Length: 194
Image (cartoon, rainbow, N blue to C red; front, side, top):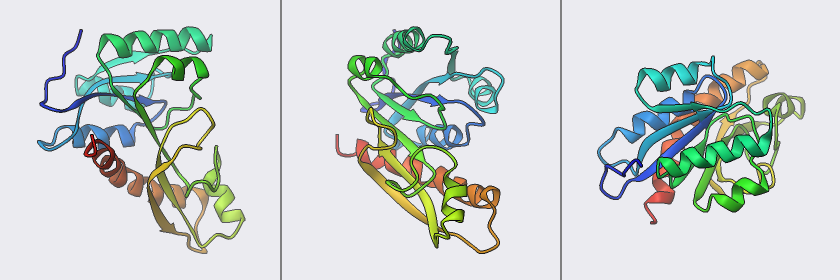
């Protein structure tokens, strides 16, 4: 079983489904002397994605979990979490919703980053919805994960101005840069209280 190698650092897993840009930002944070986490494990429901390639290249233990049966998939994930002594999970573009079963068996903190100013625009297509509604600002929120989708208590929110010329793609690109910046800050904030 993996042991915690950094003094007072929590073993952390990052769950992804895609390019893993927030994974990269969490990884870079984990390498800093004053970081609060050891990044021990990456879980992905897709194998041929950039985030998985990044994890393997940087020698982070990586497990691909196929979601043919949700409870079976979560049982495997829980096994790997226990095996690696994981006490903290960061969801980073993980496109699966965790079940009651998962929450019943994983008792530690789980956080997520969402590309809107929650509680506005839970779920998907957040940038399209913000532009269609002629909002002046969108942004992103790091929040605790609860069973209800995107409903956990916010840890950090950051506004991003919406320009008249914005498309969902251009807005997404600007918000992603902010996501990458604030995710490590949010981790630091909540784990500094421990």
